[in-house]
Length: 110
Image 1 (cartoon, rainbow, N blue to C red):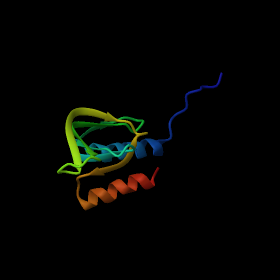
Image 2 (tube, rainbow, N blue to C red; image 1 turned 180 degrees about the vertical axis):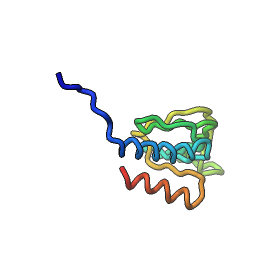
Image 3 (tube, one colour; image 1 turned 90 degrees about the vertical axis):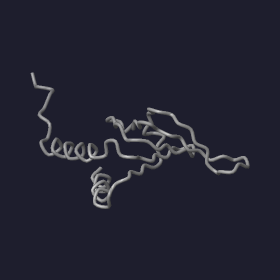
Image 4 (cartoon, rainbow, N blue to C red; image 1 turned 45 degrees about the vertical axis):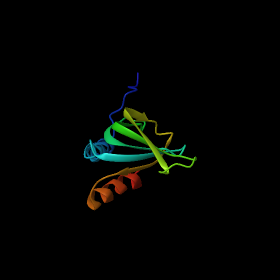
């Protein structure tokens, strides 16, 4: 009987470790995440799962107000939130230029 479990490719394991180490560098940094209904969430990056869902800590929601008010954006504190990858339209992290360039290399390798 043939073994259904095969040894994983060593290059893919090394590549995954590299991606994980890049994401670990983002822990607890301020992150601004946009979602498809026009809202934005600002919070500390807490974690990301294999599906790409993001959890932000001490998050604040920002949304546009249509009515006439002194400020064009309304905000409210939310705490710990999960943002599904299917809803995410943008993601910005406070970091140095070198770190931004290394993060861009993650997108190219997909």
